[in-house]
Image (cartoon, rainbow, N blue to C red; front, top):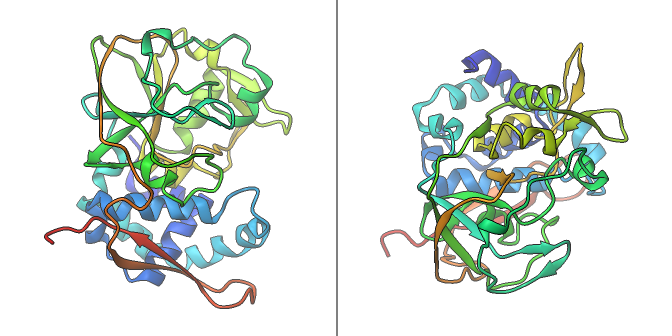
Length: 306
């Protein structure tokens, strides 16, 4: 398990983590507030979205954010050390997984299609060109942890925050219970991702090591990225004598599954855009590079207690 010093450095070296720290400070959110998934999940989603690799201002943010985040190193330590964020680095909860009917094929939305987990495929060996580029196995074989009614990292990301996702509302989704033992590789930081890539190596066109998903499937049934892993590993270059890695494009806490699985599923009420949407918190992002007024992103939170 990574120690506190390592996790603080990982948070400061991840571009998503940098955005998270800067937005946390600008918005006046305390470490205590982060115990609530209704706070941590939207903040993580907006942080990932704000530094999207294909955004026109990505290079500007990549140059400016790390220095701003380093100024908040004490805050980074306070966040990592606080008991309120311990859940960020928990292993997958197999009793609370949720599946969304989103990408059955790239760019195609099929509403209401139930999960057919016994038809899930084992990735081919070697991985396809798309799988090496996207750093994930092909297909809609992924789940996210449910933290409350209509509250998963993926639902928050889809709810108008992450532009890379192609979806329509309402979203159909199912809770899932596993009926067999599964072996899950945990990603809680950049070294975990690096170890996965080194153990089951493939290479993307830019030279980075990425997973050979077909080879990984021989030993593992799924690969889980925790919230802590998202904030410390996404867009964080990690090097060793074996090569370099950098997790990219995952955007949310989630698990990609690598074979057919026996599960029991239950359809949940559809997720509508902005569901449970009183505006109770503003997230602020600093004005970087004279780009105009500070970006203010209003996030929707459940109406708790009326």
